[in-house]
Image 1 (tube, rainbow, N blue to C red):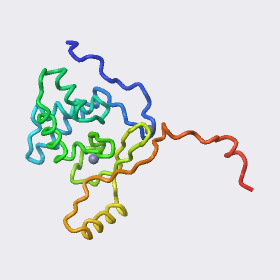
Image 2 (image 1 turned 45 degrees about the vertical axis):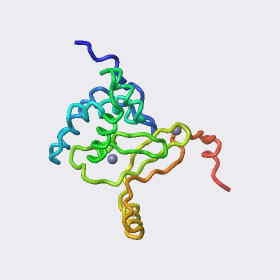
Image 3 (image 1 turned 90 degrees about the vertical axis):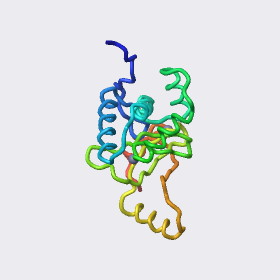
Length: 185
Ligand SMILES: [Zn+2]
Ligand SMILES: [Zn+2]
């Protein structure tokens, strides 16, 4: 049984904040987590929804909707665009996927779902150079600032916070040695 083509096994070191490569084994684990996560909430991760999540994970967790449509088409032939969007909507409602507007992409939630996957305030760090996205969580100060904002802007609901910057890979290294050796005068 060698149906699975060479997947993105990840010998590469996960470097800093760049989009992480996701190994086949990890994809499987995350799909199982997602399944459990949905059934705990009385929702159904249908084969289609599961597949869209899988395809997203195979793209290292970040993709545009039309990439996922291409992937679906490659597997199943003609696929209506709404099919993928509906699955993404569901996955977003479960917070298994987040939308990142500034790069017009969807990312698989990077939170470890084992224990909790309650509502969480995702904070997306978006590299404006390479477009990589990494998720951290807005705990404490930021979370409470957001609550204040929401109270202030009646009815406004913050869905995601995106912060633009430059990831570790794209940030030029400072000329380390010289600077580090000499104590400041
Ligand atoms: Zn998340
Ligand atoms: Zn970058």
